[in-house]
Length: 266
Image 1: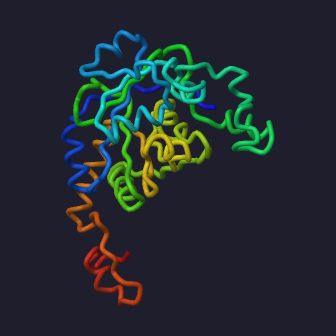
Image 2 (image 1 turned 60 degrees about the vertical axis):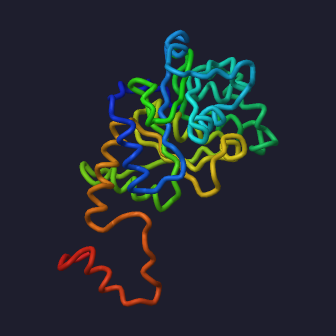
Image 3 (image 1 turned 120 degrees about the vertical axis):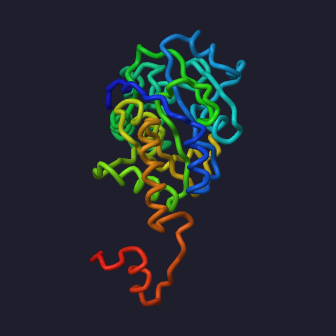
């Protein structure tokens, strides 16, 4: 279980990033800003903040309200069902009871040892520093200096976004799949490590959070998203853009390759 603290975020123009993402990748879902708060009062001071008002949610639902409905929503651990969602965000303790993962035995995992191994594999923000969290559509600017941005996209859109992130300062990006509680692979990992984090949204994210069948989720710092968008812009000028037109599985490939590479050897 990763216990690193979130890195200091960098402020960017969220509205411009969202406009570019819709233009370049034709996203169907609004990118989301997420921010952790040390003081509940600071979360409550966010412009147009909504609160669950007694309703109990999963964190997936809270993120879904921002991505699917355009809401700005703030929560504390008391608004979440059980400790699992809160633990990922650092709002609930990752104590010995939580690490045993007993509610998941026989539901998601065959044995207590399997459930405990799953809990220990999750990326979580350390407990104790943060007491609230808020999400908002990235283009509203209501969250000043958000910790991370969340982008939902289909696989073709997502690979171009990753290609954009790798355009300059290339490095190989590697991720894992914790399975159930995959929010630990996306916002949990990005908040805990500061690294861009791609996830296959899990059953609860799709059942409760409204995530579509074809959507993947990338969580990353706003500055990293700005870098990715700049890279996608550059790729588009090279003719590498979305939607990706099928060339045909029986066509002579040389004309298409010439279009991309000219006289270069691919």
